[in-house]
Image 1 (cartoon, rainbow, N blue to C red):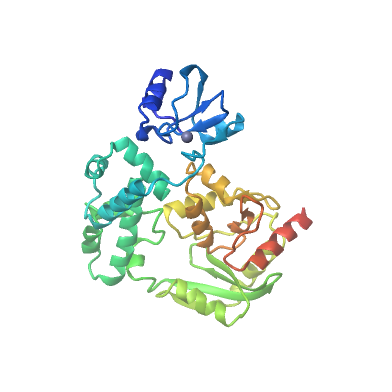
Image 2 (cartoon, rainbow, N blue to C red):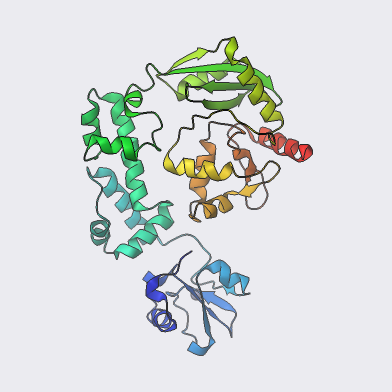
Length: 354
Ligand SMILES: [Zn+2]
């Protein structure tokens, strides 16, 4: 959590407390030594004596110093008030309905907030910055548009890109298929797969010519290719020949002993945010776990816990991107895309292997 440069001195912080400035909330917290309570700057409780006040940049820091959160302003809550939330939702709608990316200052003005405050609130509520939201939105719109349109150039302009070359550069990490391939929705795009049995039941392993694009578990081997086709609706999904055998063996071996190196190329397809989350997951060692909250903190986005959970659930590469190593803060296993029972088995297995 960052402190705002606006509140970088004792005087400025104290003035904000005296003025009960709402815009100072989340920038810092003040604690009262005589009561042992800490508050948000805007708290309506009685003003303390200045000499008894100390400041913290996060509620965690205040708690670590032994202060209790105030019952009135609930400084540990991550919820922002409803009015603010409505404003941010409105901002999302404006972004979604604009043909170009709206300027931050214009958006903030429209909502009656200062640009900085708006930016911070947006990130807190949505989990990403307005710019990332706009860019992600354009990417989604682009991929929808590409599927239905004849002219790629037209689709680019529809999605709000000012020149089509921008798409190739900017969207490279978001749409991992090149625009032309994407437009076709996978037509001419061949995915080979193989189905095998592993310690967790049936497994399907699929690859494009760039690398492995999906590893998924299932209970019914006949269903797995159909589910794969659903994920890549217009790609040609074909059963692989015998050349695939060693690749399947390699993956099955890795599922059983994930502490070994996995050196096969991957074709990881996801949004910029998903890739960011998945990169963190790939750093979690076998036998170790991390909470959704910790992952959110690691990507510098401590409020994006739900978005992190969603990114984990969107993972298509089981075990290789070890989303099973992410659990609840309270130690509960929480969910797993391929069933919580498998998650438990994987984690138990890693403990034994260690
Ligand atoms: Zn308070």
